Length: 345
Image (tube, rainbow, N blue to C red; front, side, top):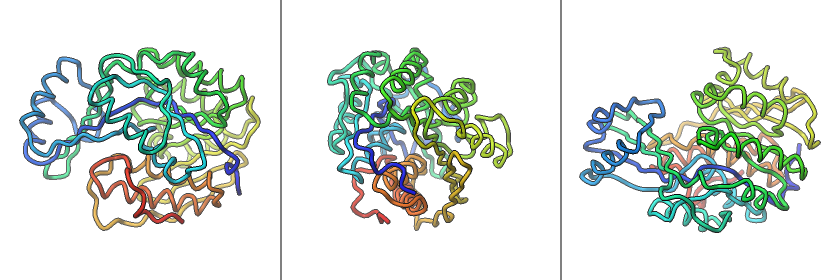
């Protein structure tokens, strides 16, 4: 089944993020001091961020790396698919974090539109891992993304085949406006829409919007079983997958095939088409070591998506996804800067 090897330009709408990775001595006390709970996305106020970053200056083992779920995905896809043009539509500030993020996109040959900066602070994600492996993640949005306009989105969509929407956009103050405009603009010019679910908590907080987008607008829905269960407010994975399959069975304004790709941790992932055809991958192999699982889902999506763009059959594409995910979790950073050691099926 070759469904995407005709794609030449992809636009991704996501949040520019720098990942601050904290390991080793002091990580646990930092979690406790700022009441950060492992396993969830903690929110930090501006005042907390200022105090938090002062604490970081005193700690060893702090690393800054480019991040952001959508950016992780498109940078990897760009490296695997050099014949496909990839554009990331967002603004990052003229600060240290923005420079790190922008340089990562440029090194992957991903265009950043518009060609200007906005706001004063780029978003960042603090990933703190203590000696026992407990991990807490906190996000501070900054303000750079708030300056992206609907005109910026229209310009980015020119000549595009697919636009990918990152689910976290809905957490921004004007995220709903950007979201709605992107859908209308894409449909007006015949651009296919891909939706990435972003965290079960985020999906639950914006269920109505995610449901409408998945059912009425998206040609591609990417997520994991936890997020799909949150989408349908059920703990039954099979029921959630069946509901999502039914949701993508209806025809859309832009007439192209519809599918969903759902990962499930150590269990087989599923690729489901609008006709109900299911391709299950083999369970992912256990890697030799696990350093940081942040970004594993992005790696799986990137590898599978790239495989489809390269004309691979679905099962081979999913195997590429597992290979990329394995590579990601064996390094600290969530974004792959080098894919030379990755098995491309």
